[in-house]
View 1 (tube, rainbow over the protein chains, first blue to last red):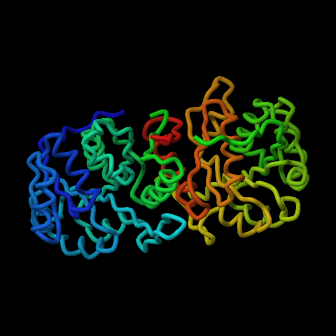
View 2 (tube, rainbow over the protein chains, first blue to last red):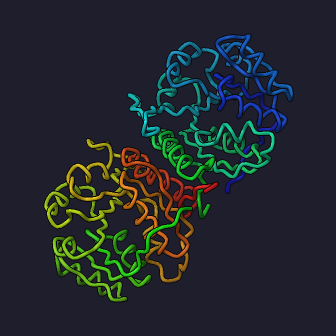
View 3 (cartoon, rainbow over the protein chains, first blue to last red):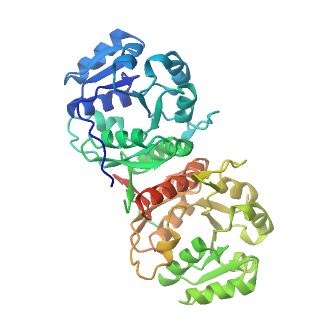
Length: 220
Length: 220
């Protein structure tokens, strides 16, 4: 693995931080010593989520979080993804924006990938935020494991995709802040769709094997 | 993991078995003691490939291989995928057909997933072969590792996708014939696209880390 940049002390903002995935990531970054800002459309729900995480996490409206944080994670529901990012273009300008959204549908047979006009949620983010440094990562990490106080280490490689080498290096370093996890470069943003969609397969695997499956990349 | 069916002794036919991926799989199944039939449009090239593999592998035209084998692996180039399968509908009827084709494009920035009208190569195979039991598997295994006599074990989970439980169980058992590999159920055929497309990411990973990357599923 390459030398990765130092990320300790960076303030991590999480848009949609009141959902399980956002809250789980917030919890692990707060435990790792990062100042963490939980964002929500409602400041009240953001404060509540921050309180449940503790470890110094604070809550605020999405726009305030986008403005204050050094690095911003997008963990909003796919439904409001585009509109939320469009409304935050100015405060997110120049920043590393990490998209971890999985556009999935669900029916009786389980989960499946939704078509996305731009190719993927991450590419949609890049289209909507031309002045941000968009990286795709943290798609596969189980919210349940992130939130479980009994889970000390998570056996997982976080695939990190993007077209800006310094940004992907930074996000790889951030992934390594979760005990047990490793950030592995996974390709350019144009190859983000299949990484997002693979979450549907992991859901099938979880159902078949009664597991919280993740992936590891071998020979790296 | 569930109990998997016994597959030893089954004859494995490989359409497009003269390409690296097909030849590599043929070699490992022949080493595991399976009768192996290498298929090609040209009987001459099929014989040549079978000779280079040894271990009892035989070569024949694709149609003969489709008719004779118990289980057929489709390892043809994406270009000729649909036409080849259409021409083999009758001999493939009733059989387990394993599609391992990755519809990829390549340019200066590396590999990327091609759009497929049916959703994926595997779904195209299922549409063209309504009377076969189509399973998607063996997308990520490195041809170089399969063919390298110095490589005794391949550290890899083979994701096996399909809608027919007995067929996916059988293919999982077959994957386990490659030393070091394991077959893991990966979901229904409608979620095959992202598994095929993920090969583009593995190619990016190989380039970045100078590796022969594969994947492992954790917690299973």
